[in-house]
Length: 283
Image: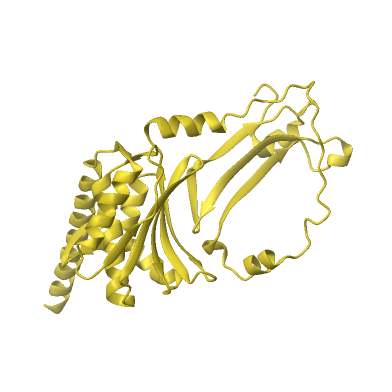
């Protein structure tokens, strides 16, 4: 009898979990992504957080011409949830909402003074269902961030005694077009002179370098590069035939911030190397 009860309980638990996942997926597919002024989003988020009793919220200045491609309600829920958890668990009472463009994206920050937290706590909050004022939703902060094709992480500035959650968001409207134009760098022709620069202090230790050495990789933002070559001996004429890179933020790959590019090696591609990387001369 106990075995039957145990089996039924397990089956029911799995069924409930499946229903929760289905509800979460259905919610995400109904989110309408629309162009919105960044200043309007900041104002909406600040008002919602301020509605939590006793919390003080200020808005950092926002570029009035900055547009985003977002679903404002889910973002408002995510940031309000984070503010409420900070209030409940760390007694934070003052916040600043700021937003600024950075390359092809915008950085939306929820800022507070003093309290820092562990990476484990941040990851747990990111994966917990969003709960505001006693009401919960099957969505998580990660669901909201993934829907926007962005990223989420925690940062702090010890000198200013300041910490913040950051959400990376896509630009919209004219802002997105301007960012694309800015990233379109004209290619150099073979006749162009290409100056050579040497950095003899490349490996000289600095205060910033020492600070980075003490931090975990999943606390940093960085870009990883990889290359394919015609062989393993550049001194004998082997050349790069492909280069790729991807950005990693908070230990997560940003697939929308990567590239792969074939390179003409100006020489033949050995069959032995093609067997390894799959790149043929006709490519």
